[in-house]
Image (cartoon, rainbow, N blue to C red):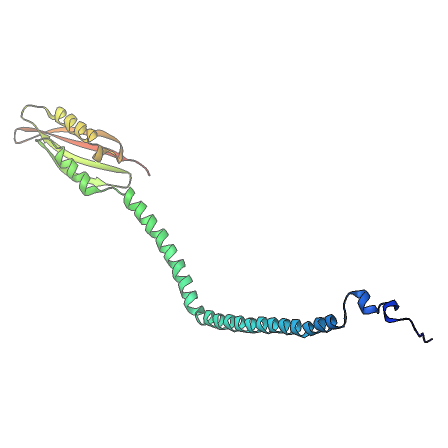
Length: 194
C-alpha cells in the first residue's frame, strides 16, 4: 500500500537514517573511510606477508648453512668425547703420580740417615715392602746402637717414613772377617696400602 503524506516538512516524521544518527553527508564520510581502512589492513597484511617470506628465506639459508656444517659438528662432537676420555685418563695419571713413591728421594734420605760404619749390601723393593740388607763394623762394639740410631733417624724423617706403616729390624748375624767383628742385618719396611 502506498502512503502519501501531505503534511508540511517540519511535521513529517524523520527518515530512518536520522533515527540511526547518520545523516546523508555523514554516511558518505563513513562509507569513504571503509576503503581507507581496507587499504590500511591490506598494507598491514602485505607487510606481514613480506616479513614472513624474508624470515622464511633467512631460516632456509641458516638451515642450509647448518646442514653444510654437519660434518664439522660431528667431528667436533667426536673430538669433545675423545677429549673428555683423555681428560679423565690424565686425571687418573695425575692421581697415580701423586700416589707414587719417589724412590730417588727415599734412597737419598737413606744415605743421609746412615751413621758411619754402616753400609748397604742390598736394597730390594716390591709393591708391598722395602728390604734393606746391610753390614756394620764398629771398633767400640756399638753395632746394635748404630742400628738403633739408623732406624730412629729414618722414623723421625717424615718425608721418608710417610709411605711406610712400620720399619722393623729383621735378622742380625755376627761374623768375624780379618779380626774385625762385622754384623749383618736386615731392615724391613712395610709400605702403606693406598
